[in-house]
Image (tube, rainbow, N blue to C red; front, side, top):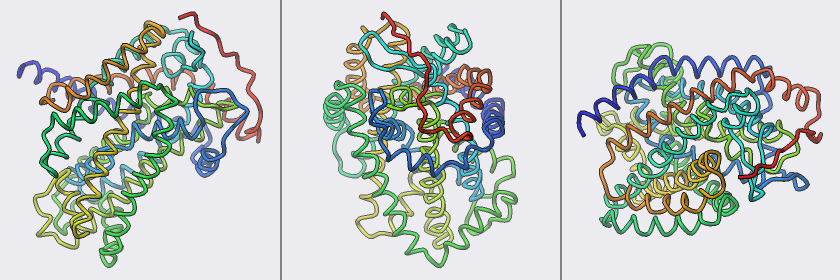
Length: 459
């Protein structure tokens, strides 16, 4: 098993290495240019997300799809991932996370555009789409669609289920002393109650959970920034200056080269918002929207909240806390670094952080359950739905109870491999993305109805 884990780790290092980072960032830049810097329309997307398109057909509202996608992406990466990036590359890594998110908004727009344009109706009448249908219907490359679905169908159990459940169980045990198995049983029951109702049930829970959990976490961050007020300007300066001259950071930060700084920020940024990996468009395809660009703008706004807002605030909290107490924060990494920063709020700080970690991880379990389900529906039809939901619920308990080093490495590798066919779809259909953006956004037709056919499947 150790040899197998080392082998998988080697593959993981390659698929998440420089080639992947260059491909993803290159796609971000290319689509930013092709869509005429669609990021300019961020706040239009925010406005549309809270403006229901009541006359359009779909399984969930545009905001419901956004909330479900955010449930899957707002996770431990926003809390622990930022701390890890700072530990690897210094405060400047936060800038590169932010910059990666800014560019990635164009890719997220493109993913959602293709998801809605090429979506279909399953045998049960539900909407289904994502990279697999863009590859099959848009590019005529069904084999790549099958590969994407296979990678997603297996990766989801690790990256979106077992590892998340395990982090919850570890957090609850460390904070409250509750056995991991007991946490697993409760988590399994709660998860089953939600996902057995399908995407409508998932989106309803996420619509309420996401604003609450993110709002509470942000409130905690704002309180810490208020307590660290005199260090915030220096923290912001360290983030900006450290992005281009990491060695000048000082102030209790580990030394880092320019390459380490950029790689840490870019890799953690990509992991946090998942732009280019192809997961979020699976739920975008289920959204009630009159044309592809409306939901694409809504989906794009998710990166704004996830990376531009939450990750930046987290970065300021961590950097200002290190500057304020370099001795007390020395040697802390990952979750411990974030815990050290939140200890600035007496008694309530650690509780808010623990609650954030638990709810962020659980929401990821809910969001990824839908991604995995739709992948298996693509492969074998609607008959896969109930067996998948039952299996997903049981695996939550398994994840809470066992060590997951191998599972994490395998899932992380498969998660990266999802990106390759998805990037083929994005680049191969970039002309379609640009055309849809021009037709509905730049020609001021956001209220127009699409005349795209939505085929009915017989499986």
